[in-house]
Length: 327
Image (cartoon, one colour):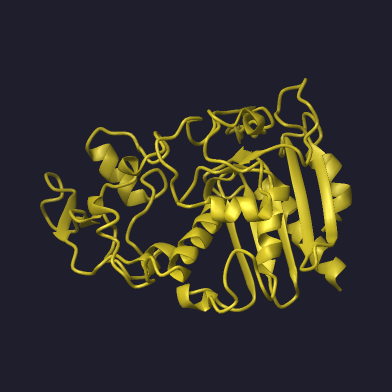
């Protein structure tokens, strides 16, 4: 495969129809930069400005790491335990039933079956993606259920929990395909917020969201969530810079992190030793390996709800570059 440094200018060039712009960064446990590069532009518009490390991004599902840290801080303070039920905090969950496609003979009139939930829903279930909830725009059964009612998906409509609570797809605990100032302020994350309508300094640096037409052309599209949200959701909604997010990853690699106590064991919520990683709509992804003391962030704003093989080669080249630099 071609080296990252030769791929970047080709794939982010104007008119290349691969990705308008990316910001890539990898850092060691002591804060030393392993790799740092911004390439391309803030939108597919021919007159778009160069992308830079000062630009902000819609983090989409990369928000989840921040909210996981906030939840674990609550556990450390004794406000909630991992296996506590969350019904008193989210009473909207009490009446949710488990939905499944009807495999019987009466599917014409009853395409979906509903049964009462029997298992509790705990904080651990939320942190390990086993609560039974899913996005109705992404899950095939939920999309079919919405269509059967003549409805469109709502998960990205309004930035409130009401747009996410429809039904469970499984019993809580089964396998599954807040006080954020305690995170942002200690690390100096001054470009991170849920509220673009209040933080104009973050909004004016926001990279435009793009998507790919069926013919392969990269075109502008709307942001995933509206600029003004009703609630700070755990699954998506934050806006940030690569630098702010990197500061959080560096802290989590420390022997004595600022955000969490040393004795807070990540394995308690299902994480295994080695490399942790996650991604977000817009083709963002982060990784962290505590054994090798390295973390990285790949940031773009190309919205594709299926794996984008064209940009995948760029992300893979980034991973290989970091592995090579680590020796």
